[in-house]
Amino acid sequence: MALGDGKSSEPENSLRSRLLLQQQAFLAEGPPSAAVRRHRIDRLVALLFENADALAQAMLADYGSRSPVASVMTEIVGIGSTIEYTRNNLERWMRPRRALPGYRLFGVRAEVEPSPKGVVGIIGPWNFPVNLVALPAAEAFAAGNRVMIKMSEVTSHTAEVFADLAARYFDPSELDVVVGPIEVGAQFAALPFDHLFFTGSPSVGRLIQRAASEHLVPVTLELGGKNPVVMGQNADIDRYAGRIANARLVNGGQVCLCPDYVFVPTERVEEFCQAASAAIRRMLPSVVNSPDFTSSVNDANYERVLGLLEDAREKGAHIISIAPPGETLPDRATRKIAPALVTNVDGSMRIASDEIFGPLLVVMGYRELDEVITYINERPSPLAIYWYGDDNDDFRHLVKRTRSGGVSRNDFALHMAFPQTPFGGVGKSGMGAYHGKAGFDAFSHHRPVVGSALPFSFTGLAAPPYSRSKTAMAKFSVWSTRRKARRRLARFQQSQSPTRDGLITVPMRQRGR
Image 1 (tube, rainbow, N blue to C red):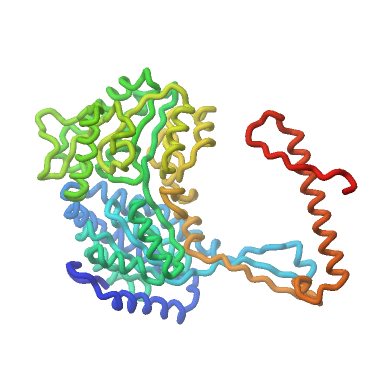
Image 2: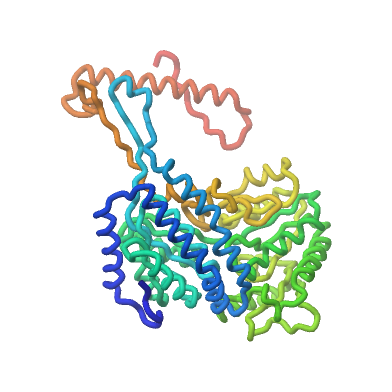
């Protein structure tokens, strides 16, 4: 089911009726079998791969310039292995996990049972409008849920095609795709789902969480941030500068995982800029006429990125434009902006704090790694930190002393490329994770089921009357645990340097008191 041409807001009660249809179907069926879950995932895979060309053409229509090959690779092929991994393992993940095995000897049996939450709402972004709704939908299916998707209104052609395809492959009680303007998105976010999954900007993520809180709906927020890159002191700049430049230009720089700024040893900044510029020129002999260079998705993002660039220029930044010879850029007709390196950046410039989401890369010098760590830690936690260089003490120090959604070394977004590793943000870059088992767990409620065959009530000790034996038991428990805790604290304090900052000294009770 779709919302027609998406030009007017769907009545809120219509969205509620669509949700009610899924809720009633979920309650009527109960937790689906592994076979049903796999069948739903198989139909989703068929939807994607049987219609890959149509979806790629729809994304091309939305962007104006976006390689259909890139769309197929990133939006469809790129998530195939994660979906397959989830499909192949869901039956194992569904099994109850035995808990308290030692208590079985005494008649207590405990299991933790993954159970589906019910109906999962997914709100997708415009930068990967198929990938970032299809993958969480597959993992929600694996956990046994029904799914409603709100497609981004920015990529309206893709939204319409995906909604039409969904209606061919699924009953709306299983998967229902909603399209429409931003008002529909606001109504969608306020529905009483059993879980809400959102991918987008931190500013919109706040609104999503606020809307979900009205019904106490748990949320997963996959947001963005300014992702730093650190070049090691002895890193091979000729080898890695091109990789970093290429990463900045994926989808025209419109990726939440793209590097936003690069720290390079101060004496090697010029060397890095020359190597990165050369790599971009080799990759893009043309920008305006290149079908492989993705345009800004709309006029608003085009103007926003240009605004960041002009603000930096006016405040003293050095702009290294990498426009191909003979081409006049930026080009409003194609919404294309020349790739550029930006140096001499300071905190007064918007480019230092705003997520770029375009083909610009800030380059900064550093002398000591701790300068970099302090800079990163003084700002909101990014979705990714990148390190280019050896797996050495400096790399491990950077990982240990910073916080981010993930870390990749010597490659772009490597930490999210495998279904065996969870993907998600932290702090301003998001909450919760998915991909593989992490996605199954996110969309499941892990319910303990515990039973007793004991001849007495195990928890009855907490109920009145409080006899002398209960009182003595409570006092003994407090005394023995307190004694153990103080011994541990004493051993720890004795093992530390007396001048160590931040050590809290706990007063020890004298023996016999």
